[in-house]
Image (cartoon, rainbow, N blue to C red; front, side, top):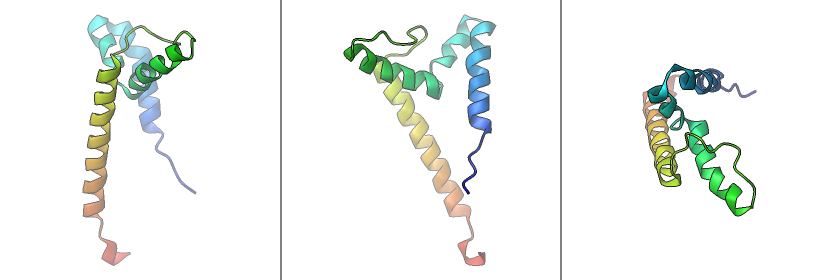
Length: 92
C-alpha cells in the first residue's frame, strides 16, 4: 500500500482559496502554485481545441509556467537526492 502525503494538496488548496482574498499582491502568488502553472499550460491546449479555458484570470504566460514547473522539478529532484543519500541502506 502506497501512502501519499496529504499535506501538500490540502495546503495548496487552502492557499488557492485564501490568498486572493488577502489582497492583490498575495493574489499574484497563486498563479505560481502548481495548480496555476498547470492551468496556464493547459489553457493553450484548450484554445487550440476551440474551447474557452476554464480560468484565465491570474495566469502566468506559458513560458513562465514552464519555467516554474522546471524550478519545482529541480527543487523536488534535489530534495529526493538528498533524502536518498542520507538513507543508510546497510542497516535495513
